[in-house]
Structures are given as structure tokens and as C-alpha cells.
Amino acid sequence: MKKNNKKIGIIIIVILVIAGGAYFMFGGTKQTVISVQALTVEKGEVTKMVTATGTVEPLTEVEVGTQVSGKISKLYADYNSVVKKGDLLAEIDKTNLLTSLSQAKASYNSAVTERDYLQTIFDRQKSLYENSVISKADYDEALYNLKTAKNTVDQRYSDLQEAQTNLSYAEIYSPIDGVVLSREVDEGQTVAASYETPTLFTIAKDLKQMQVEADVDEADIGEVEEGQRVTFTVDAYQGTVFEGKVTQVRLAYTEDSNVITYTVVIEAENPDLKLKPGLTATVYIYTLELQDQLTIQAKAVNFQPDVNLVQAYEVQEGIENPQPVRTPETSGDEKVVWKLDGKKMRPQKVILGESDGVNVQVKSGLNEGDKLVYSIEASKETVSGGSAESPFMPKPPGKNKSKK
Image 1 (cartoon, one colour):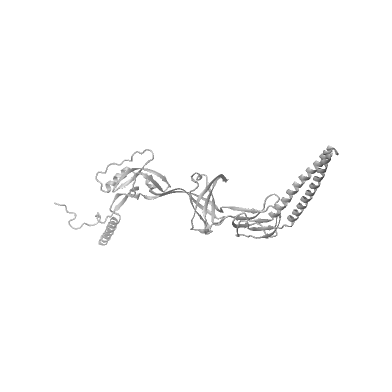
Image 2: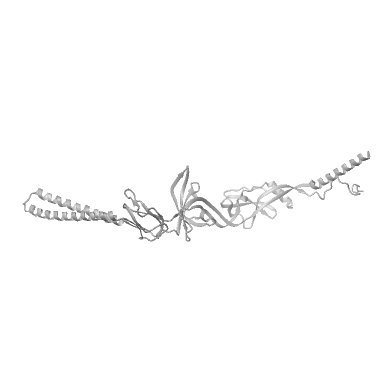
């Protein structure tokens, strides 16, 4: 019996110890704490951008071709050759062209001789006709033959000029100062210019000035204008940002898989020749740039607190007899933000301007340095139970005595 009583006593002590520990660990009281978060009105910028992709191209690109057929006898330029206007780029074999020129000269000289001969005949027939020696028919025949000969001379002269021109086409010259981007022929290759001019070279005028042809979505094109600042990057030089400006917004559209885009031309300086034709560019067009403006973050504009929570916060902060707060009515362009004045929260009417989704321009109603609340929350926080008494633990002597 004594052993059982001893076991029971040990069990009771263990229970009391566990209960006391749990009280001190998890016990205590919970109270509501209201916290606010605020931001500062400050000077900043409001920026809007349109993003697009495009291709880097030379500002001026010229295709150089030939207007006569023949075999390429000599090339004087290659890829990346720097050329000046008038430099000889290539020659076409002149053998056939010289033959054609000789034939044209012979035909022309023959026609001139024939014309001169018929002119002499006509002069004689005219004199005889005026003296009534020959008939009118003989005179008309002489006149007809002379006119025909003159027309033949004109035709042969045109043929001669064409042959001379074709011979000059055998030498291909650069039409501009620039750099050869591509060469499409080799020496010994035959080119045919029967229906269209074959391209021999492509020359870029000046690679120190480049342009980006960007495809802008129809949803964004209304914001893009000539003169706007542009930054862009290319994969070839990651981390490098290039500058440019919009010089043209083309009216013609492109449709691809039911997506409408417009071409926007952007000019950019390229002094170190990093930008190369054909590079893909990621383009940022600045459609709005407001510098050194009084701004607030958009989350302060969207903040609408529970007015009862506002009053409870002021009570918590020790403000005696806080007055009920109401959101004022607004008109026109007015908006309401919540200003933190010391420990008080008060609604403030403001006039706002442009927004980029993050920052909003403030036109009136606030000053630099003002604090605006953008969040107010109530949460339960546990007060430490270390100073509280556990109902399970023994009391010190005299603790349970009533006061007399």
C-alpha cells in the first residue's frame, strides 16, 4: 500500500511540473497590435517605355550591279573593302562589247556615206525638176530616198551610242563612299543582264551611323513619335547599352499570324563599329520621361483603409479622444491619399499627373518629405507569460492569506 502511494505521489509531481512548464511556455495573454507602413514623398522621375525587337541595319545600303552581260574578268574589291565613290570594283570582259562597238561604227559610217550620196542625187534631181527636165514622180522618189537615208543615219548613230555606253558598263564603279558588305560574284563567272540587273556588290555608306528597324505592336504604336529617346541592347555585347532616337514611324503595317506590327526606324551612333548589320536588338522606346518631379508610389494611391482601424491605431498610439475619420468626397481629377502626421492618419486630397505603373506624378496637395501610409494591419501578439502565475504551482507562504 505504501508503494502504491509513493508511485501516485511521483506521478502527481510529474504532472504538476509538466503543467507548470506548459503554462510558462505557452501561457500569457494576447493583445491586438495595429501596425502601419508608410513611404516618403520625394523627387523622382516618371518613365514609360515601349519594348520591341528589331534588326541593326546600315543607314544607307546600295546594291551595285551590271547592265550588260558577260564574264567577270577582274575583281578589285572584296568583303569589308573600304571604297570611295568612283573606285573601280570590277570589270567585265570587253571582247564582245568591243566587237559590237566596231560593228556599230561601221554601220554608222556606211549610213552617212549613203546619206551623202543620196543628198547629191537629190540636189541634181531637184535642179532638173525645177527646169522641167524630169517629172514630179522622179523628184519625189529622190526626196523619199534622201529622207530614208537620213533616218537610217539617226538610227545607226543611236546604235553607236548604245554600243559605247555598253562598253562603259563593263567597268563597275562604286557609287558611294562606304564598305563592301557582300560580294556576289567571282572572277570568271558569267552574269546575265537580260531581264534584271544582277547584283555584284552590296555597299554600306557609313557604318559609323547605323539604324535599327524595330517591329512595334499595334497596341503600342500610338505612343511612339519621332524624336523620342531609345536605348537598346544586342546579344553580341551583353551589358552594353546603346543610345538612339526615333527618326521614322512608317505607316505601312506588317501582318504575321494575325499580329499587326509597324516598323519604327531608330538612328544610332556607332563610333567604335561595335554594331554590325544583321544583329538582333532589344529596343526600349521612352514614350514618357518626366524628370525631377514630385512623385509617390502607386500603392499609396490605391490604399483605402478601414476608418475604424485608423481610429483604433490612434488610440493605440496614445492619442486622447481621437475623432472619427471619414474619407472626403472628391471631384474632377482629385484623389485621396492618407498622410501620416506624427501619430495621426489623415486623408489628403491631391491632384495627380502621369503614372508609369510604379511612380505617380504629384501636381498639388503634397510636399517633399510628407509621409503617406500604404498599409495598415491588425495582428494578435502574445505577451510573455513569465510574470504571470501558474494555477498549478505551489504558492509561497502567506500568498493565499486574505488581507485583513
